[in-house]
Image (cartoon, rainbow, N blue to C red; front, side, top):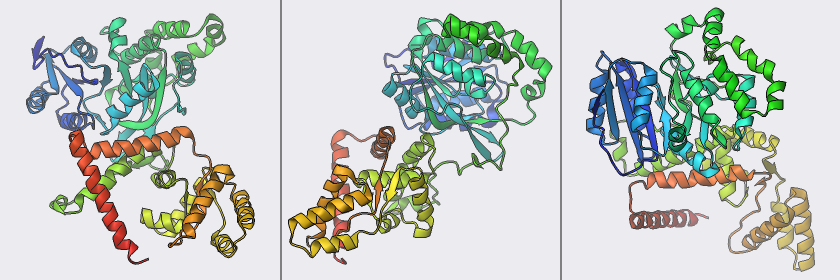
Length: 495
């Protein structure tokens, strides 16, 4: 094996991303660029050239010359399993990711997966992904939970759909390298099919928790008419599965207790007759979108970035991009996530006009979003309460004021904390400027969603200030605060 640019280093990167490469010159640059564009810098990319003859080897070496995070292994054509094993032997990262050379990652993929693992204490993260056919992208996932699950629970989901790519592949998963090394887990080079599925099962039996990250971060390119696709007749499927059924059966024996295994034995054997597929991308389905419209983008023409306000444009786009991950995770449209984020940071209450103005969209467009969130019981839409405030302002009877406030609180279902907020708004409304009580308020915002919105805001800030020292970031925060104050004074003059 000829190894180039592999140098020992004491630094342990957060993640090692492994890409086996064989005659992938047509798509390799896209794959490499997506990995090096990850919004965390602390990674290493290991490219394993498996005896390519189409110029892929040169592209790997060029990437290593341009970026010190890239490491390259050259070997004779020994197959994808040997290539991945060679990378595992030299990987240094705390976590491991695998990417196929004709696929690519979203910019936030590694950050979201690593953070999910660290925040939940999970040993494996499995994500949703996009299936790409021509110019269409369709989202694919299977586990609709927002919490870590045990290996037994994971097996319960997998047994229902064992042939789903979601479970079988390794490229939508994050692994802990210490678990891989402790148990000396490697791909079986003797197998030409299901070797990644077997690796997954061998890994899972050594895990404690698995986290299903419901954000699509991987773009899997589904090639029409591929050799693998053409070979998947039912007869071939059964023959191939007979060669791995022992691994599959052993997995459930080790994960389940004896009673559960016996109770589900017939379901386990059903694996032999399930069709291995990832479903087609169907343009009519809501989950299918034109490639490029599946997440927030920034669109600029040459010279636009030199505009004096381009920084604020990109900062807003970064915020929407991080908020998009929240929308994906909780099955919201981006606009719904925007409304919830605004209410969250505004203290839970706002008016329709306030939302329309802040989001910059017409009322006729926002109204269905508000109605949808109300139907999901995430927000409550109350009556116009300005008349109530007028009644309060006309009386000097403190007892009467409290009575009206309690009535208002009951009508809007504000509760004690809401009543306190109403009183605070009232004090403001009776001051020099009239601030009417909001008629749209948060009702049942799950704690996990509130936390995710908060993390998205912090992510947006960190991404915009990436590369700055702490003191420089503090100065930027001060400048931004001054700009906001200046703008508020400008609009305040017209009130």
